[in-house]
Length: 57
Image (cartoon, rainbow, N blue to C red; front, top):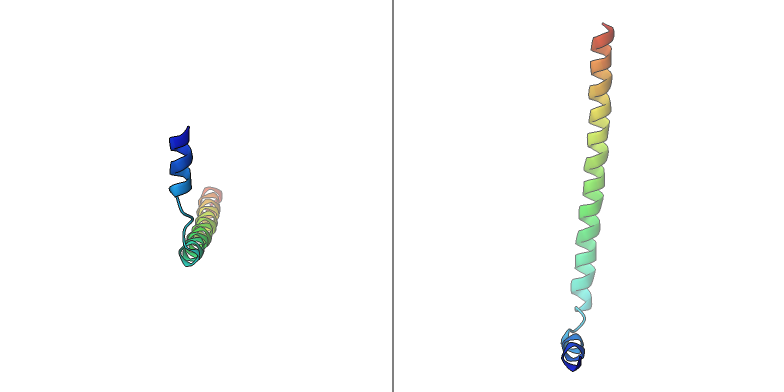
């Protein structure tokens, strides 16, 4: 029990600039992923409409 308390206290919080840059990087990756996902969805819709048009023709 004492050992776990000691190890928990030895873990220091990350320096503020590092945490901020990490958060910024994470948000950038997230926004890029969402943008890519939106583009993919639009492409899928386009392909679907093209295939439906071919079936009609």
